Amino acid sequence: MSVNYEQILEALWETVYMTGVAFGFSLLIGFPLGILLVVTRHGHLLENEIVSKVLNVVINIFRSIPFIILMVAIIPLTRLIVGTSIGTAAAIVPLVFYAGPYIARLIENSLLEVDKGVIEAAQAMGASPLQIIFRFLIPEALSSLVLALTIAVVGLIGASAMAGAIGGGGLGDLAITYGYQRFDTVVMFITVAILVILVQGVQSFGNVLSRQVRRN
Image (cartoon, rainbow, N blue to C red):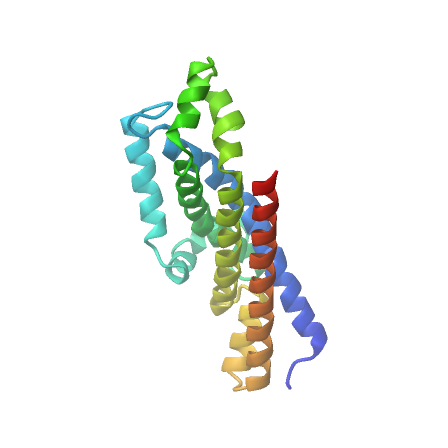
């Protein structure tokens, strides 16, 4: 094998770092957008046709761009924000642009699963729109939201691996540089195995957490 275990551990850390930081920023963007997508819909709490349509169009535009193309397309913006277009810090920028709209849609779908009767009951008690959102809507959808965010993290792990195609670091970069370009099947197998274990771990944790939330 042409790489040592220290390099593999470093690549694993870079993947975890990219995924974690990108998820944090994506959540800050996607969660409020997802809420807005729901409450500005026709017949909902803060119905606003213009805001709803603009948000849908913008989110659909970003979601329709394949991640590998998005990475290349926003290289100038990435350089402007982090000062470089190569490395883990640079990979985080397109990851956020990719995952933010994706999380917004996942949040929207989860919140739309809440029975309208819950909202009507809250309105009958005189709750304000903000109280309904944070004390009724989100708590009722919490189990579904946990599963949705788990899916988002899994998607980010896959996207972070693709970031290796343009020198983004992490397990994807290791697999391409050593596994593919140098025809090292052992390295390729190890990186794939680690990614599978990582995804399985995240998904299992999300499933357990979702069940715990549902019971509470």
